[in-house]
Length: 127
Image (cartoon, rainbow, N blue to C red; front, side):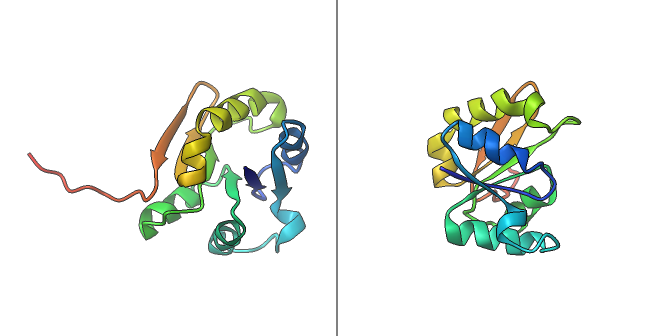
């Protein structure tokens, strides 16, 4: 499993993930810090990385494009530091490893994680 930590999260996440034997890079070390989300998503897809972000736009991109990847972990919390969320993230990674490898969106907060398989296609409402 390889994790790409987005610009809106601390580079400290790379050390935390590496300490859990997970390959991780911070976007600032592999790409332009001002890059559009689509560039980051393309890089992650091409290089087989999972995007870890607190930016809500990534889930929107997945939904609007019916993309099958890359997987995205979207953290929804006021405190997004490793000190606060390390155990929650590691638990979600371990529990959803197969889904992350296949393509999914995980929304993570302090209390729980919710996972959706990609693509995030809208299903028509029927009665």
